[in-house]
Image (tube, rainbow, N blue to C red; front, side):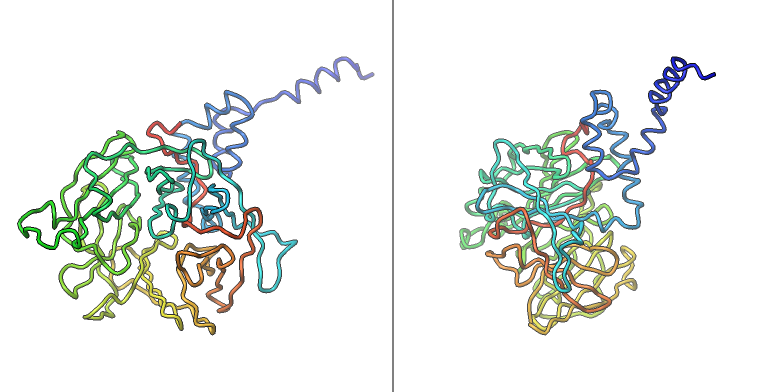
Length: 397
């Protein structure tokens, strides 16, 4: 005869069986970053375990090995109505999926004491690396944000910064694997308009000044000057690939180069472009990272030509593909979605709104419009990011 008291006690014990901590953590490293965020709310113990720097690093390394990593790309956007940031996730709502449209959702991100507008958050100045995004708030303070964990750090003002009223600054964000440190890099130079009569021997007027901020140390330092002219037609933020930040620049008059700043050595070198060259101007207007590959591209209105360096540093590995549009639109590339699809901005300008975000299928040569719910139409896209647990703080907590 079954003892009901013993049976109830055994059932209660079975329901209280716990997994060993190492097994639980191993399972957790394979879960999406947003799921980890929810599990951190279960208890204080889980929050501490799932916030340790070693766990965050292991989770990120596991995440990078996932062949479907491109599906974890999201967009950062700013609403000019609410002056808030939003993340736009590409997990498709199949209930609202039409032949030429795809419905996605935007989630509002609130950061107390910070407001944003399209003037300070735009694709030209936004820098991104490993789930972190760098841009300016409405007070023109540099902030480092992880939109997935909703952590934000305001960077201290650099004592080496040039007067913004009479200078230009390019930004970059990347990871130094040798020192295990995320670094913000600025390239600053005076506007020649204000220095028409400057002395060519005065480096304060003619040099491109490099400063580096260490997230680990929380300090700015000077890193010399760039040997290149960065005052190009499309001065954009640095593109992070393979431990380096990349900018299009001029080595001399009519001699464009891909300038790569090594984040460990903190020195520039050049990356060999494709063999197809043009002596009078840049063949390509833009640099971008698609997956882990450095890409050059130029949009002419009839065709967007893209070159991808499939093996970093190997000139022969550059391969070409293009985007064709019968409407003669110009595009800016944002990120990959799945293996053969690109997320694009159509007809990019200062007044770009969200309905101009489109998906292009490289195999089929077709476009789909993204219809974004959860945000007013008056928003601007600030770039793409990966959903990770990487912290904007040195301690990783």
